[in-house]
Image (cartoon, helix red, strand yellow):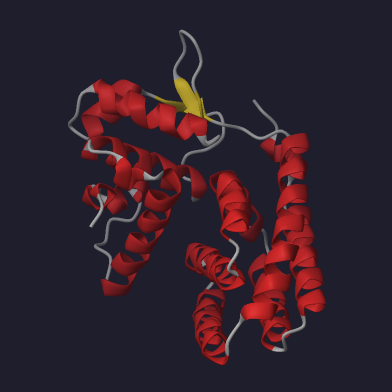
Length: 257
C-alpha cells in the first residue's frame, strides 16, 4: 500500500457529507493509485508529501480546484497537520507536472491553460493514441477483448447514471489497458508525460452536456475495431475521438486569468 493511501480521499470533496459505500471507496482508491503512479509517489519516503499532492491533484483534475485558484501553504499545512515543508515539496512536484504555478513572492495557484497549449497537447495526444490503437489491434487477445468489454459495460453504467467522474476514471483505465496491450513501453512513457495535463482537460471535456453518451458510443466503435484486429480503423477512430474531445472544450474558459 502506498503512502498516498493515507490521505483522506473525501477531503477533496467536502461537499459530500455522507460516508462513501464500498464501491465508492474502491473508486477513490483507484483514482489515488493512478496519481501515485503518474507522480511516482511510491518513491517518496515522506507520507505528508504524497497526501498533499494527491489531495491537490485530484481536486484539480476533478474540477474542485479551479484554474487560477490560490493554494495557501499555511492552510494546506493545517489541513494535513504538517509543517509547510512537505506542502512546498508537493506543490513543487505538481508544478513539474504542469498542474500548479509557483510565483515569486506570491501564493502558488492552480495552473491555467492557454488555447494554444491545449491544441498542442491534443495534437500530440491524437497521434500517440493512433499508434496505440494500431498496436493494440495487432496484439489484443480474445481474453483481452472479454475484459475490455466488461470495462466498457461498467462505463455504460456510469453514463446511464450521469456519473461524470465514474465514467471519466473508467475511461482513463480503459485507455491505459489499451496502452498495456499495445506493448510499447516508450509509447506508454510518452503518454504518461502528458497524462496529468490531459486528465484535467479530459475531465472538462466530458462534463459538457451530451458528451458522456457521445464518448461511450465512440468507445464501443473503437473496441469493435480493436476486437476485429483492424489496426487502421482503430487508429482512425481513436484520432477522431480525440478530436471530438478537443472540440468539446471551451477554450476561451481555459485562458489564463
